[in-house]
Length: 160
Image 1 (tube, rainbow, N blue to C red):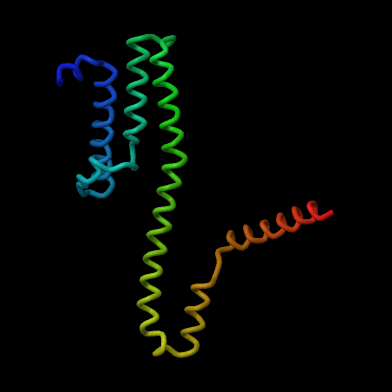
Image 2 (cartoon, rainbow, N blue to C red; image 1 turned 30 degrees about the vertical axis):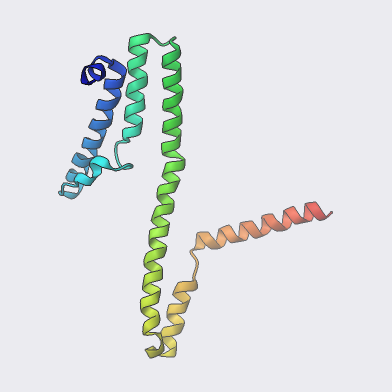
């Protein structure tokens, strides 16, 4: 079976590209943090994208082996575009959502801890902390204003 993998040039290229990308993640992290993080060998995300490396290597190997006019290359190229689009779109957004969910969990745990000592605080402390929890960033306020204008404009068009 190992001989079949080695003799399949496109498959071999894809597998090696994925392995190299995963190794590079560990090396890059070491140069940035001066710590080895071997968990990156089996993780997704980070630099470089192993998914992209794998599908690009596969498509390029098929282009070399079969030619640019080959149906196999066409399939691999479209597959590569889909994987890269997904990596920069859906998966990237999922990562951002994970960051926000983790922050919400930390904030919720902090809130629970602070609620235990809430009755011991004076009135001024309570007001300042409450404002901190209820405040908005300027961009959030601007977005709310734009949404309000847009909603009103849309309702105006619909009702007249």
